[in-house]
Length: 350
Image 1 (cartoon, rainbow, N blue to C red):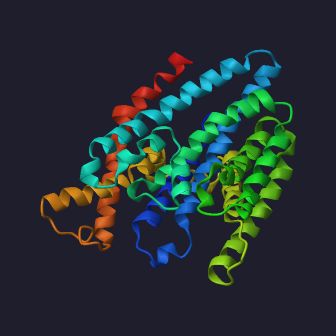
Image 2 (cartoon, rainbow, N blue to C red; image 1 turned 90 degrees about the vertical axis):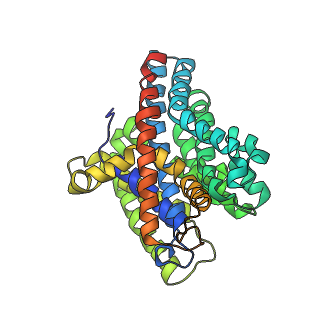
């Protein structure tokens, strides 16, 4: 199995930049004519579904070959995922906890929701978003996926994987039709994105003979999805619109293209360019910090009695670019000082 896939860091970079634009640009701005932020989050879900499932499907083959047990594989998976996502997440949580009064978001009242990766259910139960912490809902969804998916794949459904994937896609696509409120943040309504990504991993690892047919199908679905999205947001608004499914089809087609066309112009010249590769490498930190840093930015400037557009409640392109550059800088420091050194422990502990 190919360990490193060229182009995926570029996809991560584009996805996280879409999220930043969505959260930082004002309502009514032309950059928000379509919900690029939710689309970016959805791309991350598809990527996670693909990459995590590749590992787990390889594990299924090892179990069948009797070269590993489900316990060994799940233990290794949990340790490696924990080392990747927990350190800076909990550092941020405790920073927010001890500065609760400064930023004024009553974080301590809801600390347990964030600590146990359940903030998506907090949003759903309260029916509202929680300021600079709102974006953490997607990390909660990812963690819930990581907790359940290995057991489903390696223990309960390892002989019925295709059925599991198709069920996940169907349930995730239809679930919002039968629920009220901010259902977009619930794991059950996100599972189709993970499932579509996992379907590509299934073809790659379990059924490589299906590759050409699969590529043709997702290519057609991607084109149709682009058309539907364009019509919905610019021509005629459909009363029922499966945006997550459509975006997932586009995302998986692009990921599949990267996987099977490593030497293409799109991969080598665009997605693998130095800037996108760099941002993609540190994209977890960028995503985690991008909403929080601007909040502290305003607090510090107000205490220094420095007036800028953001402290006055206005938007400025210059300040947006400065803040984004600062977020990237902090994310780079986070990668070098915290994340990268900790990742070196993965092979020692698994």
